[in-house]
Length: 116
Image (cartoon, rainbow, N blue to C red; front, side, top):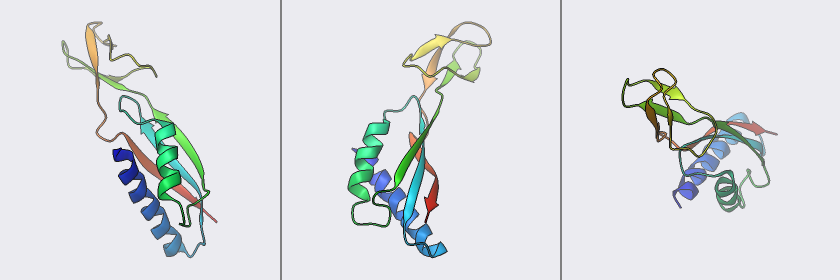
């Protein structure tokens, strides 16, 4: 589960930020998940519970936002955002030909933290 190592690094980043600003704990962490990847909110929550145990982030509230999937048309090259769905192919928004989902460069990331 590669999410665990990524979430561990994010918890370490949040901990470093609390030290930097002189705060005793992290009260919220805001994640963005890019659709088209294989990460779920549930897996991030599970990994967070493991990674945050015994740290200033333990018990923090988790917030999630989702970026829509991106598609690329192989006929005209158009790259566009699709709707939130599980469809790996959809018609191009420009020419109507078949477009395939482009896997995201990063499946999820830490957008911001809230400290006490």
